[in-house]
Image (cartoon, rainbow, N blue to C red; front, side):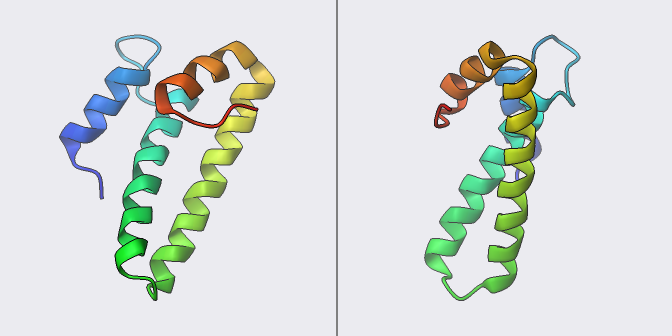
Length: 89
């Protein structure tokens, strides 16, 4: 679970404008942070299959948003990939 302060920090990092809270960039940023936290959890608790299934869902959701941004504007994806340290396509 991401705290409210962490979430607002991520939103400020990747938002396109001041009131941007739901763009694909913001959603990818939040999903990335949740994926990182769940990955750390699964390193400690390897047999937690319920969390593993949730992680797979988050990864699939993030991948869908990434494909959308890359298809719409590859330059926006490249900027986002640098900010969030994602692999480039």
